[in-house]
Length: 275
Image (cartoon, rainbow, N blue to C red; front, side, top):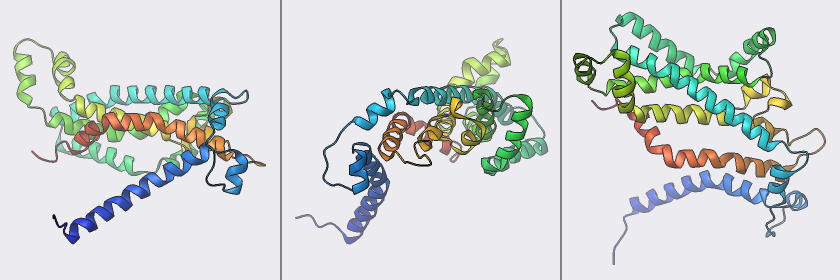
């Protein structure tokens, strides 16, 4: 008979409790989404699962959840594309070009410091600015704010990815007659793909789940999913079931992306840790 050491039991217990603490809220909200409103208010258990809340969220006459999901998708994809389009060349330039050490240190320091600033502190200035230039309550304004927030982390991740690529590859390409810009897009960028995917996933997930900026810079016509979920809590009534159903639906894309992209995120975050 195999004897399991006490330390192993302790480790299993810690892992089990950690896993339970992560899954318990999601299991609870799935359960709420499958209840009638009266069962939610009375705390009925056991209960007969019903899909009425999902039906009302997706196909209800007064529900615009699909439109709000489209808004989130537009903002997420657009901001991610812009972040990568700007961040990848910037990271390449900082990692490989011969800038002065002072300039590189100041620029990289700015990106890291800016990333640590809570976005909520910028909402007031953005609100006043966007009201003046006509970007308030537009998806374009929301995209620009997400680009500003996500760009520092993207540059940092992509710098680590480029620093792990041997410089001899670019030098050999240039010797063979390849332009620097062509070498960047054809040779270096594909090699930095794990970092690019990691930065893109993190940027998209931020945009998909971001609440504070969207709440203050949009109205009902341009709500994104997080704000739409909060709108189920009205002044006179809280639609617990529909709020839970919308929350479950909103987590599906994030779970899928994390399931298939976690190895890229881990690789991107740890790139450059070991030389």
